[in-house]
Each structure stands twice: as structure tokens, then as C-alpha cells.
Image (cartoon, rainbow, N blue to C red; front, side):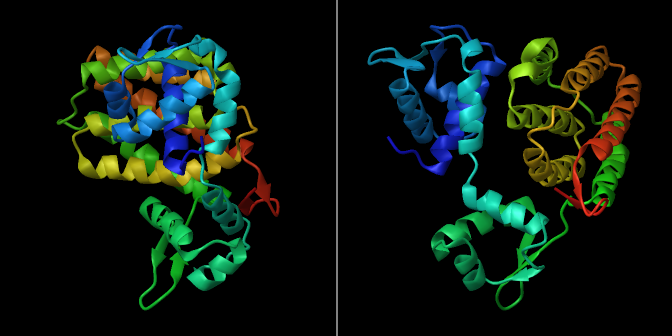
Length: 302
């Protein structure tokens, strides 16, 4: 059964969910719960579960629903396979050619259709996604213009300088309120990574877990502009992180630092949490700048 891009992404998210929660064989996979957790309607959930049934990863009982057929610990190979498949190939092609300097600052749809050999409808769907992520915008009249990306050491450094200013400040905001349920979910995910999950999780899974941690804390700040800023930077970071998928950065240590921040929040010591967040981001900044690959010695990200 062929899956759409959305259904493929949802399938990946179901596998990620099972691995994150370390679900045992026989666990009920409720469609309504998965739809809420992943943030989609039940239709793509049903299609993805049906496909997983064909792959014998899930079993279906007509009266009771879907159940995990194997332990989540056995899904590492599938996670690797579907992490790559879930991303739209055209999206990645445009990202790679833009970051490598092949695509100019200003482009038109006719040229892009020829460059990538796709229809206008397919191209516009991907351009719409890129526009939402904030690294392209429509030009007045016609055509598109690429916006600044995290494509150099300087841009990476600038993104961390902004995060160092914004994220600790969010923790100190008088309106800060941590949600106990979300806090426990974040703690559970970070514990899984720190204990052994970092060894088998894909680069995409690790990045999404990292984003979830930082964006959740930003939401607790009660400041909409802090939330928007953190999400915007994560969207731009995502491209870099995906393209550095072969590099195994110190995720265990980062997860342990995340847990220390959550512990401080749980005991109501936001000053300590903000201090730990500042140390965590500064350490990540120094580690990322020295670990990512660059073209031309210093300029562009590989």
C-alpha cells in the first residue's frame, strides 16, 4: 500500500512514540490518542496503522482496534528506514542546493520546476512548507526570495546568542507555570535518551526530542514571543541537524543536563533552572560550532 507524504510522516511518528514510551508487545494503540499526540486527524493515523499491520509490526482486532505486535525495543531498524522516508525528497533537495549555493537568492517557479523536474502543484506544496518554516518568502509581483538560514559558523553562533538571551529569561518570567503532566512526559523522554535510547535513536528522533524539551519550557514561560522565537530557531536548526545526521553528538550528556533543568523546575527553583539552561546552551553552542562540517573552511555548512 502506497502512503502519502503525510501518512509516511505519521507512520514514523507512531514508531517514534512507541520507542519513546518503550511500549511492550500487546500494547493497545488507540487511534484517538495517537491523533492527539501527533497532532493530526484520525485518517492518516488509520492508514499508517494499516500499513504497519501489513508489515506485521502491528496487529488488528476488528472489535478492539490496533495493538503493537513486537516490543518497541525491536523497532530500531524500522526507525532508521522510516526516518529517511518520511521527509519529502523535493524539500530536502531544495534545502541541500540552497545551502550549497546552487540556488540563488531569488528564484521563480518555472526555473525550479525545470531544475527539479516536478509539476507546479508539487513545487508549490513544498514552497508553502518552506515559507511556513521561514526561509523563503514570495516576492512582490512574482517569484520567491530565500531568507537567511543557519548556513555558516557565524549564523550558528548568532542563533545561540539569541537563545542564551531568550530561554533563561523565559524561566524567570513571573508568568512561568510548568504543567505537571507535560513535565513528567518530558522527564520520561529525557530519561529514556540518557539511559540507553541515545544509542539507537535516529538523528531526527533525537532532534525532535530536543525541540520538544525546549519548546515545552518556552510555552510554560507564558510569553508568546519567547515561544515564537524558540520555535522559529528550531525550524531553522532542523535543516542543519538533519544534514549532520551521521554525526553522533553527546546526546547522553545533553539529556542529563535536560533532566537537571527539569528537576530544578519541579522543585520550584527557577533561578537554578535558568542558570542550568544558560550553561547547557553555552556548552551546546561550543560543541556544535566545533562539530558541524563547513565548506570553504569557515563559510558554509556542508
